[in-house]
Length: 443
Image (cartoon, rainbow, N blue to C red; front, top):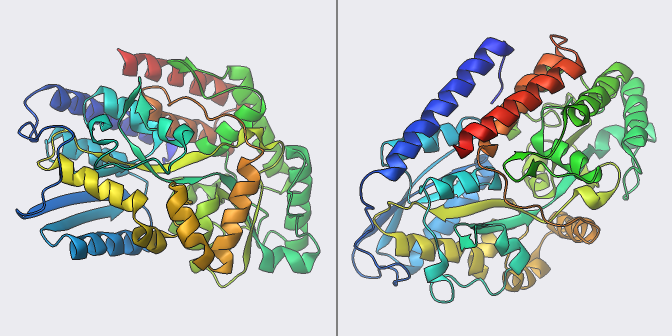
């Protein structure tokens, strides 16, 4: 999702809008390919079934997901899978394109950013009819399950839960005498002071952390600390003044040397974990989700530790890291739902998945497998439980059109970071574009 310059930003936005327009047309027309199946019916156990599964993530996620699919086939030989995975950048563009061609995957990984939009456009199937039979979710916290509901209907099952964290390269900062305490920093100002000391001590090789003013998840955390949410219904829940303060905070981090220059940060802004600046050893820290520690750690020979994000943990919440959903026009919706249930309810599947996507959402599975966690996974579990105990309430499902907000924030943040706009001008542009996009999405 890296965007260079306003022209490319505009082209990307227009392309995304066009894809969603086609998606809406495809979703509204024609009959469902699974119309011959009764909603809530049993999965196919005799006739051959081939399901397509798509997700975003890195190689570690791909390997673990494939192992679970292979295990399902081992237990149900009539079901086989084709798979497609990629990095986060461009993932939803591809989903939208395949949906417009009425050829989306039977099982689609999404996050809460597109849940309302995909439900309203009829891309994903309501799942309530399977709950209690094929879909066994008694072991999942109802508050977490509710994150998969739109207007009271269940459309998505959380694959895992996670929360925000800051990953520190212990190998770099501990010899400097600057390893932060387990409790983290009391405020963003304290965090910034720490970061400036790290960068000064390393001589900018590496920087303390990268400029993450383009990160919607970090912005949401900071905004919740101010007592606000990303959305107020179908409108932004933030003001131009809020965003100006956000951009000014990051400008201060860059000026002090704590945060990297924008040119160091930009390659990682698209969310591709392989370009994470801790992995490339350009920074000694990075904002992340706690579950991603395992994958980040695999890409470096340095020792990493988790620290809470700066300031009050009221900005945090136990969030669904991703959902699995069933394509509304799939040929074998019942079997797709059974596969989704297998991912969240089968202890063997849970043991394979570990915490790569996040902590197992099903407490029964979590309790069954956590004694076998290695020290790193046990650390992730302890960290998550400590932070979520202090977390704020779970926010409502994001507004329709949320899928475009990350692009808009990234474009404005990069304009400010590269000096093309002032923080105030970048904030005004972002808020205006966000407001217009949410209005357009709801029309």
